[in-house]
Every structure is written in C-alpha cells, then in structure tokens.
Image 1 (spheres, protein in one colour):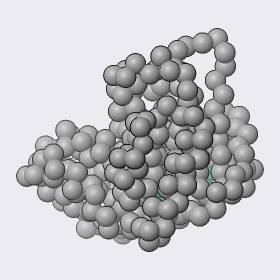
Image 2: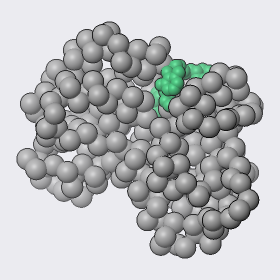
Image 3: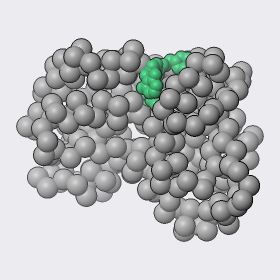
Amino acid sequence: MDNRPIGFLDSGVGGLTVVKELMRQLPDEEVVYIGDSRRAPYGPRPSSQIRQFTWELVNFLLSKNVKLIVFACNTATAVAWEEVKKELDIPVLGVILPGASAAIKATNNGHIGIIGTAMTVKSDIYRQKVQLLSPDLQVMSLACPKFVPLVESNESASSVAKKVVYETLKPMVNQVDTLILGCTHYPLLRPIIQNVMGQTVKLIDSGAECVRDISVLLNYFEINRERTTLSKRHQFFTTASSQAFDDIAQSWLNIPIKSRTIRL
Ligand code: I24
Ligand code: DGL
C-alpha cells in the first residue's frame, strides 16, 4: 500500500477529462493536479517550449511527493514523455501508448485514424507506437486545430461544432474503423464525432485507456491507496486564475474545488 497521491500534469484544464475517469475507475486514489493554463494551449507551440514547460510541471509534482506521474496531455506526452520517464525513479504514464494499444485491439479491418493537436500529429508518435506493436496496420492522422477552441468557447454541442467537425473529419470518413481521440478535449465532442464518423466506428478515449493502465500498475506494484475513513484531499494547482479553474473543474467533476495559483 502507498497512500501518496497520484500526480497529473496538463497544459490547462483539459486533463480533467482524465481525472474524471480516475475518480470513476479508482475512487480511493488521491489526486495532485497541475494545469499550465497561463501558457496553454500547448498544441500550436514549438516542441522545445513544450519540453521545457513539461519539465517544470514534472518538477512541481515531484515536490508534492507523488507516487506516480500521469501525463494527462497528449501534446506533452508526444514531446516529452519518453525523456522524462527515463530520468525519474517513479513510474510515469502517458496517454498515448494506452490509446495506441487499445486501438490495435479494437480494429477489425486494420485501418486506424488518429486526431489531435498540430504538435501531436506532427510528432507522428501515435503512428510509431501503433506500427511498433503491429507493423501491418494502416494509420491515418489528422490535425484538428479548431477543436480545442470550439470546446473552450462552450460550443461542444452547437451547430457550429457540427459543421466544423464535419468539415474537418471529412477526409477520414469511411477510411478507418477505429478512431483515436488523441487530445484531452475531444471526449467533449464525442457525440458529434461519432455522428460524423458513423455509428459503427470505434472511438478510443486515450485518457480512459490510460486510467485502466494506472489501475494495472497500482496493482502490480501494490501501491494502491488503502481505503481509510479519512477523507481524501485532492489538490489542484493552476498557473492562471484559480477562480476560472474552479468554475470549470467544479462543473466538470461535480465536487467542490479550491485550487491554488502557482508561479512556475
Ligand atoms: N473548457 C476548457 N477550457 C476552457 C472550457 C473552457 N471554457 C469553457 N469551457 N478554458 O477545456 C480554457 C482557458 N481558461 C482555463 C482556466 O483558466 C483560465 C483560462 C476543456 C475542459 C474539459 C474538462 C467549456 C467547459 C466548461 C465546464 C466544463 C467542461 C467544459 F465550462 F468543457
Ligand atoms: N491538453 C492538450 C492535448 O491533449 C490540448 C490542449 C492544448 O493544446 O494545450 O493535446
């Protein structure tokens, strides 16, 4: 047993989609979350910056005595996960490998699609991971730079979203039987994406797959948190306004949140 919290990092608030999955699948675990909203979004940034920012988030989490670190951001995982994982002596999980391996299991016709931010798609990391495990699979990737701004302007269910998602995903329709949602924000667009791609296409939520791997890892190393009568104390940190963070986090997670603003 290990009662230390699990550390989550993200470019902003999108990683809360992964935290919500954690709270559903592993409700006894405690969370320390750091979101770099002051410098978000990471997707359009050069990789040198993303690497540097990600290290700052990692070092912050290490100072909070976490038992494991989860990269709850596809873009940070694409750029810095391999490097960080090599340097640390606690386990470091990203969202990309779990998403890639779930897609391999899900596909019937061997044609997998992946959508994400400009940097995630540019890195080509999902294709590399899929083809490392299954060289014969075909991977089609597509950057969707309009999707994050859509979600962040509260348009996830609007007719504008339907139009933008339809126009963006057109080249993928009928080309794949499995589509990886390779960005934290995309689960919010899931109903529209499903509609555009067709009901038979299997959508893979990388964040949810990552939490399944967290569960396996906690069991393997026997580092689950013991169920105590003491209440859990999740900790949330942001590099921007704590009020703005709390508003989004509370409405998304349905629990009271008091985050703190930190300077990195
Ligand atoms: N969703 C996200 N980011 C935002 C947003 C949103 N504004 C409305 N909604 N803003 O990400 C980013 C910039 N902010 C962040 C906080 O600090 C200041 C700057 C997706 C979040 C997924 C959990 C829409 C919205 C919401 C509540 C819950 C979910 C959601 F308002 F998508
Ligand atoms: N969290 C990022 C991701 O999953 C999306 C938002 C951003 O570009 O920072 O790729």
